[in-house]
Image 1 (cartoon, one colour):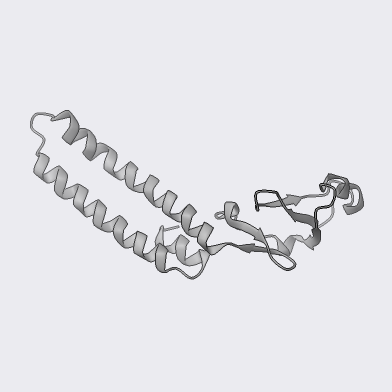
Image 2 (cartoon, rainbow, N blue to C red):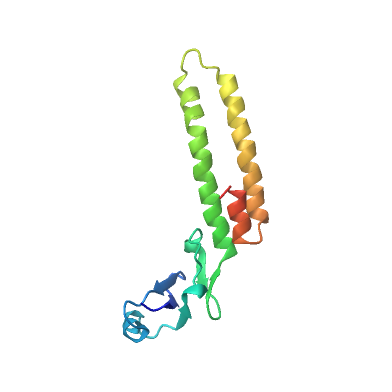
Length: 137
């Protein structure tokens, strides 16, 4: 197996990566006709797939679209926040006897503040790694 990869941009701007099974020459048949491509080594393809949806073709290799990384990061932040809110939302919504709604709402505010800080950190990030760090990854 070769350590070469074929990369090209899909019509939606995402990056396709072809891993040749036998040879690069045989794998080239899988590149859509007329689409520019690059033959790179495995070292040129990011090993970290965390922001795979934000990969774009650079001049010769794969780069991260920072704005798209932030969109992905914010979506992850919202999912994490929703998971933390869920039990508190249930307590408040169900009005369970013996559950202090004021304490539950105070806990919800702590979560809001936490994720507001994470949102600010994502917005200020200058690299994908800073976004990951903001998310605690």
